[in-house]
Amino acid sequence: MQQQSTRPTFRGDGQDTISGKNFLRSVRHQIRALNLTGTDEVNAFEDYLVEGTPCEEWWEGLSATDKATWDNFAKLFLARWPSVTPTQKTTADKIRALCAHAVALTEDDLGTKVMLNGVEVEAHTAWAVTALRLAAEAGKASSDEYLVLAEGALPRSIRRGLRGTTYTTWQDLTNAVSKVDPMIIKDAMEERQAREETIRAVSARLQPRTTTQPDELAAAFGRMSMGPAASQPRAAATPARPAPARPAAATAPVGAAPTPAGVARYVRPQAQGGATNRAGMRQPQQELTPAEKERLRGFIDSLPHHANDAQGVAAWEEQKRLWRMQYSDGIVRWDRPYPLQPGTAPVCTGECFKCGMNGHMSVDCPVRHDRTHWISRGESDWRHLCMGALGAFRKDTIAAVCWLEESENGEGSST
Ligand SMILES: [Zn+2]
Image: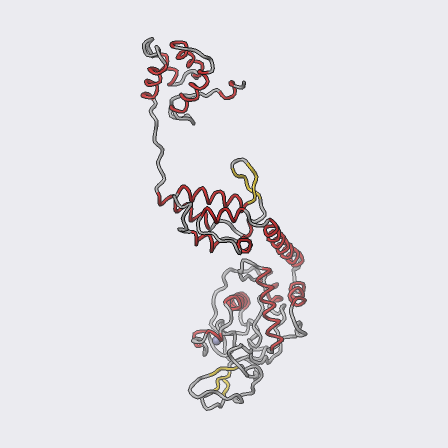
């Protein structure tokens, strides 16, 4: 027996980690094993006292009558150290806890191990066990309430693993999650590791650079891009981008395309010369150091700005896909060159942050009411960042790329 190491102690000064009632139960359990009776049984309690504590002081003040039987003694003890009812969690608290946990599992957690009740388990298993416990505490284990929260927030790999499984309660869902095919978890982990490795490799190659040659990154994107236009230099005059909703815009000469009456249409014409307008300047999100600005100056043309034809657009879509894969947080930063939409103006030319074209400021953007003509948020952020850090330093050295407004009768005029 190892009673020494498990001998319960109680001070009675409010600092104990055990309640009076539980202490008394433990003591009673051990004393019973001694087969004592009457006063002897009660007197065995003395062995559990700690010198100089309120409990010992109380014990010493008891009379012989007080210690005559265990029942009498126990009643006095519990009167002196009554049970304190712990604060009960409200139903709202329990539901809040369930909801917070429902959305807590991330793709990055998958494949990692966590400790649960002293055992090392897979993160998604731990999530399921805890989710079921919280659901049960909230009285929702057999309910579908709040289940939609978890369904929407579970990592994609888990959702893939749940495909074909029907579940209508927390019990079902958590059970299904803990049984997700281990291969799916393994795949998710390997994909993540590969992604992290690529990022590490690319940034490791970029780090030592002090000058402006991020060709590795450009090459990384260029290699993976489609079509032969991968390293096409930015032309002074870039033809219009062929957005799907904008037929004939790609190479249409001024005024050549017929326009339905009553509908103003914008296409991107051949540029004629130096830019004449500049966009409104905004502050950069974060002040870059001179060295960072110098590197950024090298980045701005590092990704191929693809030709404005079907192949170029496909290559651009691929660039965007790779960018999103590489920077899964989606945050546009100065050291993450962003693919530019074919047919738009180069960065740092005073271009509009809404449509990516020269010739006007965002507030006067001719297509400000037509989202189909806008560049993506990411591209807009990138242009904004470059302009904020470097200014429109080449607005006079690169030919402007402006919208061409086609009038209702089909006659175009360059803006
Ligand atoms: Zn614009």
